[in-house]
Image 1 (tube, helix red, strand yellow):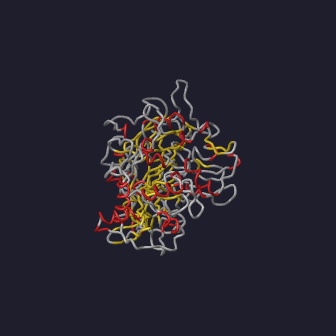
Image 2 (cartoon, rainbow, N blue to C red; image 1 turned 180 degrees about the horizontal axis):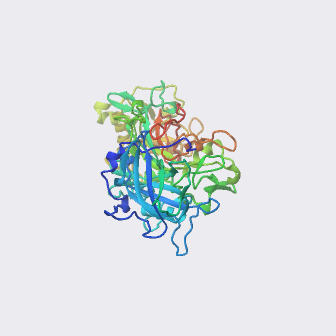
Image 3 (tube, rainbow, N blue to C red; image 1 turned 45 degrees about the horizontal axis):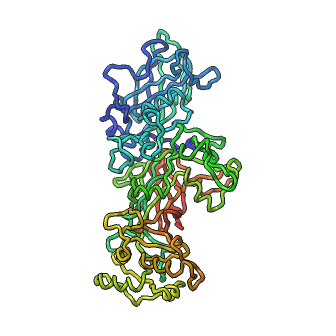
Length: 609
């Protein structure tokens, strides 16, 4: 998969990284003047002079911090007589892998490459060389002791299990000041972890042969490598419609009114998002399966769930929460939307290019590579079409979104509408408006209710809030996430079987009349049939829409479109929103994904539904 995806460190790195010294995060300990590279033995073996070349003839987009190298680790892994890697330990328990750490500031620029050079001592023999930049001490220790092909699990300094997105990502994306539970976009990024395999610059082979010393002096090896970031990045953008200097998200489907005009408003500034279900594990160096597709430690879906009895269950030996940082929509609401980022306007002229642009997109959430293979035989059942959208959320990297919707057509009691007009003469409702095409008109007429057309956001939100105040359930201004049966300003309610938007008083009246007695359509209307959209917040999720495929059957499967590959910048374009999603039933949205940025190409659907 990565055979044709080589990513080089660009020239601009010199200005960004060479002024920096030390390590990353807890490893900011620069080598002292005249000291030997970390990990080098003081005596024994062959004296080896090595030179490392990091080509950068192709510009790699990204911010200066996403290109910076604070330190570079070289892992010399010895090979046995069969050419297999020997990642064990010697008789004294010391790793056979020899590690050398270099500072970013010790690099030089020459021709088309960034160069590092130094001298170490190695036992005579053959080696594979692996490189990594900006590792923590824990990560470096893992590769040195366990080898480059054992999965690394994000862990705290004391080996503690990391559970939150922020904890996991800051193990690979290093910020100044050690941000807490939420990484704010204003937190200054310092560097990202990168990795690559060493290639012999002379013959292009992965094997380096270190011969015994002779009178000719030191053994010399020349290493070439192309580092790639171990993280991906995801950012949400949206098409907009401008009205009165305000950017609105286009509305379609069930969010259209009687004349097929938008039945309400969602401002771009009220569209926010976060990445979810990122891996806790990764291979620092890409592994491949039999199909040569990149795999990760949680590659098979059957590692996460199985079908048992009559339902899907988490595997107890591979619990989802042990492998992924997953947040439920309800958790997002309970935590009062903490950690969300602001979506931006989609602008094709801002898509990153290899040459770079002055105002290109740079924002987003980092996440670890997450590739999946759908193996229904091992799971015990085949996903239905609806299950393919819903069940994989807990182990498939996706984007959660919240959007504040204000309805233009509001069902209220006539009494509260008249009281509203008396108290709001500057935003009065048209009491004579009617919609005879509405199938619920007869129920509304019989119940003392009416559907009113609000001509602007302020009118609609003030009507909804006035109803909360009138019924003594308003939590007050500034209380966005109240509890105990109270609500924020602009809260509305919907019935599970309709697309109408009700005031609190309208719900009370319908429940009073039709809890036990069917309405004119033979339906009951009970309190539990209504969903609350507190402050108008609606909840959504979307998969990343990449190039995943069901390899067993040779056909695309919806959730594997969310395969996330390292060193990719996924820019999602939302075209429109067609329905609301509640906390209990978040709505799925398909987005168009552009992967210009860290890698060219990409595919996706341009139609949102």
